[in-house]
Image (cartoon, rainbow, N blue to C red; front, top):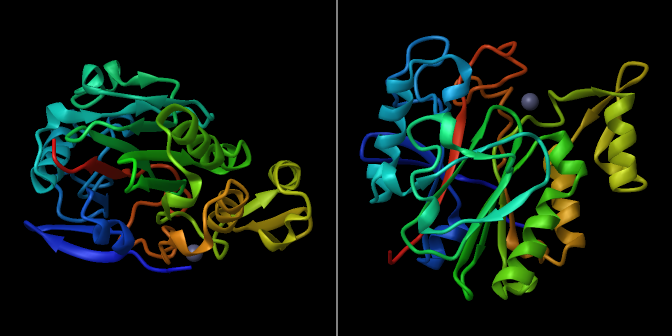
Amino acid sequence: MPVGFALTEDGNLITLTIPSFTATGAVVHAFTTRHTGVSQAPFDSMNMDFKVGDDPQNVINNRERVCVMLGAGLDRLVAADQIHDDRVLTVDFQHAGRGARSNGDALPGVDALVTAEPGLILSSYYADCVPLFFLDPFSRVVALAHAGWKGSVLRIGEKTIRHMVERHGCRAANILVAVGPSIGPCCYEVDEKVVAQVEKCLPGASHCAAPGRPGHWWLDLPELNRRVLLQAGIKAANITLSGYCTACREDLFFSHRKQSGRTGRMASFIMLSGG
Ligand SMILES: [Zn+2]
């Protein structure tokens, strides 16, 4: 199992990339950091989301910078209005630009986006939740899924894979998955209510939740997602973990928990090449 996203400097932007995805030559992609944007504190400086109270023009500027680096315009971007649920949606060029310049026309009630269209940019937004990236380099299909604890126990990773297989003819054994920077087991304390749902999702989930204070556990969301992905037929060698905790690395990321809610959002982007 490969560990480690690569810290990348490209066109004056600092982002993270996934070595196994880059090696296919099939996609351009990025996970943004909090650096090299134009937003002011507490959104400094690369805030990617309209919903946190930042100046919308700064969000548009930040998104445009990344789109330029990826080699396509912001009008090619698709964004969903994420609600911590498990709905997966295939998008194509009729959705291009939805949610790109305002949250008002983002695709409602969707937490995972799938496309087989080269040149269409999928995007998804984060500050501690788990970003999942998917690529089938043979069928040429990509996806992004937003997995906080709710999406994780709803198995949104597995549901995205099933969607890629049933709707797009992918084979699970061919799909590469990357688990991006999220809050880690070092920093993510949860209560009985959450751990009961984890236990329901993965019976005997002690490997994902370590006991802490009475009635509390330290939850390992990346590991929970990795185990769900393995059960969905993804090969261990095809799963990359980021190696980063967003709360430990405030120097690099926004963290909802560490910054008590008032902060920016990172984003994941992926686009099939050749559009
Ligand atoms: Zn941590």
